[in-house]
Amino acid sequence: MSTTSAQTTLIAVVEDDPEIRTLIADLLGREGFEVASCAGGADLDRVMARQRVDLVVLDLMMPGEDGLSICRRLTSAMDVPIVMVTAKGDDIDRILGIELGADDYLAKPFNPRELTARIRAILRRTRQSHRPPQRATPEIYRFAGWTLDAGARRLQDADGEIVELTGGEFDLLMVFLTHAQRVLNRDQLLDWTRGRSAAPYDRTVDVQLSRLRRKLRDQPGKLIRTIRGGGYLFSPTVERD
Image (cartoon, rainbow, N blue to C red; front, side, top):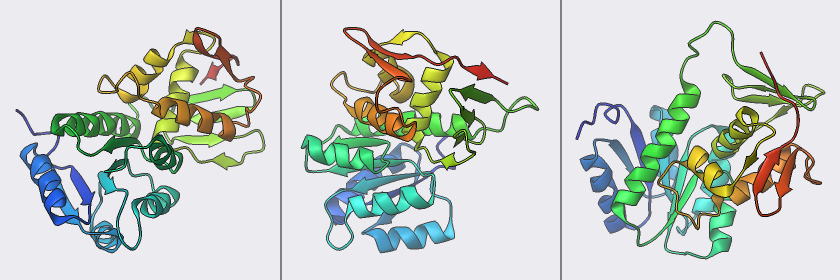
């Protein structure tokens, strides 16, 4: 297996259990990733102060500062992808993690191949979004008074106020903007935003959709309409510069 794309990728594994931390670090190391092992938030802060971290694998249940607190802190300060891993499999824990900006969520015990597949899918999406534009002019989308600079990942309302989007919210909005006025079902949204590693029971897209509607102040569902038995339709006319 070629590891060319992974050799310059640093993944921070934040897990208080040394055996599980070593297990995940060894797994990712065998896949060709560079790994920084962290026993908690303080270790992660030291790593991130020294070098750029491409993705964080974050345990939810930890003594001291827990994973949700670390996730909230990271997503409010920077744009780093987060995969939450926890022994708790309740929907409420999954939803809390996604609400705070995590890009994905796996419950222990997990299939090692699934973890690496989801990590690679997230890295592909984030690297694509950060890739330098091939054209001199950036891609600008305008809809219902909103403006999205896709290259800078910057969303502005009609008054020029910046609205922050997580990676998952940005991916979902881009799907709607590039498929405006078409009915899209959940499977399509999952495939286009999370890749083919997403499971059919995955509810992440539902949480991200609800969050995106709130940020677009679309509580009545006029911009993103729910089509009974069909899926979702992005109703505004979209202009692209």
